[in-house]
Length: 115
Image (cartoon, rainbow, N blue to C red):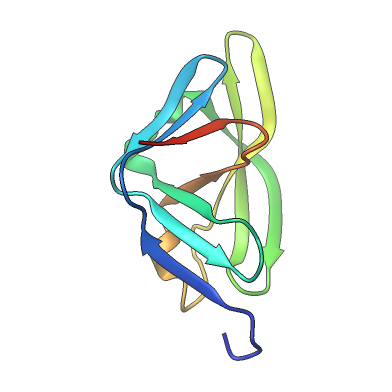
């Protein structure tokens, strides 16, 4: 990014699994690893590799000046839910377009395992 805010996106090595409340929400060998400034890395999982039956779209939106508008999902199963635990950039800004069609999970809400 031109103002010194760096974002890099690479294919994540290995298999990434996302587990929540005893359920495997996603499992993929096609995750992207996004590194932004000094933040911890974030895995972006292709929607095709997630079990969308556990996700309910919410009305929440936030805006990142570098990535664009984020939309959110709540995780729901067995009468339990974690509101807005998942986000996606459906039309990300230029320079981070490869994260379109991917989901990211708050690590304090799910267990993310790299094997």
